[in-house]
Length: 600
Image (cartoon, rainbow, N blue to C red):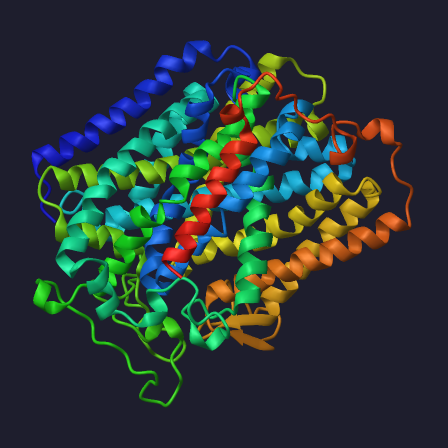
């Protein structure tokens, strides 16, 4: 790849601007509340953009593009049933609990509703999840830099991956260490506009080259161009999951488990300047969110639709069986377009599955689109948008990690009576620690060819059981702390056991599963993740109810503001009908139904 001076200048200006925001905000970081919650003074529209931009990191931009190339338009369900309904639920039901309780984190909310031990379980599991998620973003950025050869000729090729990880870690550390959550939020807003500006032209140029949506439909199997077709059975769709697994695993457990309990996004809404603004944040965010499939999934579909007559090398369409007679996984039965074979970033060797079939690196779908379709200048803008998504993902997870570590682990169990100045110092130190741990996680992710598969695996183990605890705690006042604690432990163990006993097709036992014993193979990693989430949620739900019935609940006066039936409803009489969050929620759901009908 030959980058011109214009491309390099665009990327340089971005990095200078990002670090400049951190330096500019450093003088306002006087208290721990300023550093961790931005002083709760950010306008609703800024928080709304940061709310989705925190989720618009490498996991979404690279991961959803990769999933679009691997699974097809059904990936849009990660938005249409896997995000929007849950975001509406958060705005209408959850934010009054979070904002009204003045809890500084999700684990702290669990302490207020249940007890200290329940908070501890979630604090440690969430801290691990944020570190792994940050590592995924770090890996994606290093993979991009290595693939594009940005340091080729400057650094020996075998060291580029390692140097790229260190570089990304240093930049994110710089602006979070200086400006805390405020810096992260304003950088996320900047990154949101950069991503839109960089990817909208990519989609337009790509569609023009493949003959529009109709050209994609002519090139790809029907299962890849319809969001609901083939969902009657796991063997007739690209995800390898039937509609029950999709609706329950993704649409309910993983979706609500992420948006309702993940402090990474909740933290942005809690930085709003009022409770009404906080409730609007996820609703405002849901509007652009539902159209993101056209921005991040379509490039993946275009990447596998590109054929040789369009000027790009085309991979042959695989037959349904390999030379040895093995039935190929669904993702090996369609064209690979410009998707290259996966190369191990450390050893430099091509990767094959357990049957000797080449493994394609779907994570490179969008980078390959940029290289093939963007000219000088616009290429720099597109690469900057990608780099922005990586920074957004890392920064969002690290700011969530430093808050949970400082308030829910360090202050709760290590040093309970320190000064606010000391906790501010600890927040900055934990930022360094979170970055270092993320580096280790980045190397673990090299075993996946789609970072979204890895991310959903983490969510199925951490967020899925936690959602059962939240659901019962919010709507059943009989739920006890002992029940919540036991349920969380049981649900997490159920997820680990299910993962240890199952394995995706053609994968080898280890990080993909099967590390206990293989009793079942799923058609895809994502199908395994959905059912892991269902098992985790189900076990937690049942165990929590049984233990709660056998233990004494807290008195009702102690649960006011923490249980839905005992919490005063938000006052909206001073608002016009069009200003009420419920009106906005109805409009969002109506648009969602329309999109599902169009692409069914």
